[in-house]
Image (cartoon, rainbow, N blue to C red; front, side):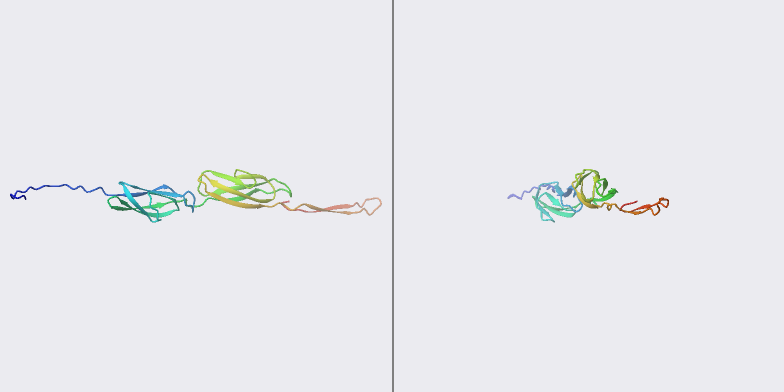
Length: 201
């Protein structure tokens, strides 16, 4: 009221600000099983002023993350807070490779063996890098020795395997002869060849 006792009622509408909401988004899942190249970004409906990650990061985007659960507390300019959570994923299993023998070395010193790399795990396309220079799933023209292959999928995940390729033992032949005992030669003679060699025969 004023000095004369007059008064007037005034109404004010005070608008409540919109609820501050923070959301964590998986920008990039972990590429390889057990890797740490995941990326998570926090998005808000306002202007955030501070980020507090469970990892210790303090920016809107965190990189180089392994798979797992992450929590981020976000504060805006008015001091309002919201908590965002996200689960960063990775492939369910690693890439793996094994080498199987398709064709053994035929004879000692030969180079006709064939090895096959069998891939498993996540991936649609694989690159092969053999120790002998082959670049496909199959390596041929091989002699005895140790061979290895490195397998890489389209995301850069790698696996490797080794195989010791053996060869059969050298064929050894022993010749023995039985002389003819009669002048006429009617009782005949004999020649015996005794062989020792490896492989299937």
